[in-house]
Amino acid sequence: MRRKSFLFSLLVVLSLGASFQSQSQQPAPAQAKKLVEEMVAMRDGVKLATNIYLPDGEGPWPVVLMRTPYGKDLMGGGSAAWTRGGFAFVVQDCRGKGKSEGAYRPFMDDPTDGYDTVEWAARQKWSTGRVGMFGASAMGITANLAAMMNPPHLAATFVMVARSSIYHQSAFMGGVFRKELNEIWLRRQGAIDVLEETFKHNVYDGFYDIGETALHWHRVRVPSYNYGGWYDIFSQGNVDNFVGQQREGGALAAGNQKLMMGPWGHGKIEEVTYPANSVVNANDEAARWFEYWLKGKDNGIMDEPPVKYYVMGDPTDPKSPGNEWKTAAGWPVAAKTTSYFLQPGGSLSTRLASEQESKTTFAYDPKNPVPTIGGSNLNIKKGPMDQRAVGNRKDLLKFTTASLDSPVEVTGRVVVELWVESDAPDTDFMAKLIDVYPDGTERLVLDSAFRARFREGFNREVFMKKGEVYRLTLDLWSTSIIFNKGHRIAIHVTSSNDPRFDPNPNTGKPLRADAETRVANNTVHHDGAHPSRALLPVIPAYNGRRP
Image (cartoon, rainbow, N blue to C red; front, side, top):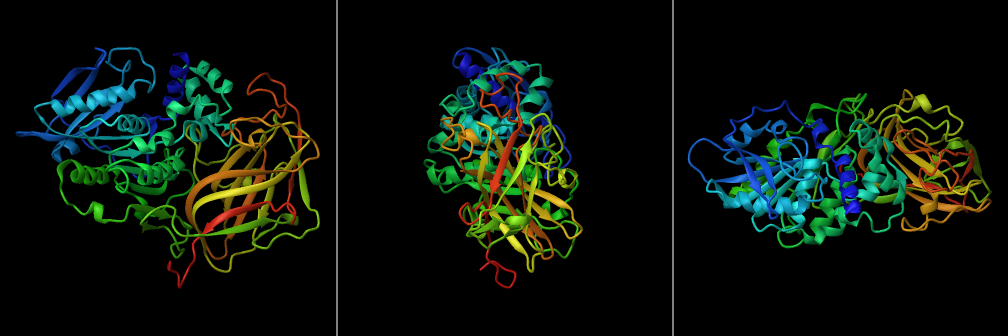
């Protein structure tokens, strides 16, 4: 029981719907008059506090349900819009939270509690029997957990910024602990002790399976709208949930998924403001979704392409290509995987490096890590921030193309392959994809990390041997951006990014075993025999348009 309780405690850390503020959001709508607060009994007799908001007039009405660990009375904003739109709006405190009874075991009881609440809502005299679940982050995850249980009267979900893997996207990335995402929030909540189990299970050993949404796509039987941002903490989760449920979902799920990805973060991004066309009212989009699936209103939403995504461009140049919405029939979109090879002297090009041995070594000291500047963060500054403040460090390598003769669109999943060695038994490597502006500004597009001990799989640890060269594959997740003419594409390589990622002590000991650290002399090879490279999904262009 302790194992499951901890796991779901970690899930709440990685959900944080109460703190979600998408750039797509409008000012909070008015709150409807609450009809009643009811204690709804679950299958085990525990009663959950539930707010019910109903439209004026006679029902019945379809139901939009939100379940939250952050207090139902804080989530009533927007209820007036739902009731004016002809929906009953129901908000419930999760078990053990707010005014609900029971012990709070974060997300552990939400699959069955979600099921029971959907079926309760369907039985009410004011309900048509068709229920949709709606929410961002934590509330989105509760919707996904309920959908996995297939309550008969759940008709659709609208899920914003939710992960598909607790191990690969929430707790770790490339086997490296996501420090700021977990530790800072837990410290604020006085629950830092729950990290102990995470550190014991830094190997993918089955411990996290109960929270791996990707393992349960085939169980989902309802249409889902997956809504996220390119700089969100769970950006890849939104994409993966769409792809997985579109391909593997059951009846009504497969083929009826939607995906929208905009230039947003899990909160306000820093330094950059995208044009007004980037703003989308998520509540309006959700209303369209539920009008179709809960009311049967043919409003054209299912005639639209399943995928809508924002191609980012230079927001400082009104004439820059990009900064526009595109649509697609599926994901990923057709692209040519193009290798950009790390070259001697710090250049980056599509030409394979020469066979002559070439490598660069730097000293990584865990006591002096590279500080985080932007990225897909939660508790610290986030987004496409300028990297020049750390650019002159000796433990950070830069590889940059020549000035681009024409725009290059990169849309899809980005991977960096590094051929490396180290004199330490274990160390980390980090990679960043950078858009270098003509004035020298270095805007972060994507970044990732990889712990070398997991190069043969995340389910086992294999330590490095001095003098041996290894290939590491770093998953930078997905994006859509146009590197404009006159800009340059860069890959930055280092071994730390703190506090975004927990610095590797380089000792090979278990995670957070003790305070011992050592300096690692880390080497990146970049020659024909060891072709370190970035694999970019480049979109072919024809007269400025996709063929």
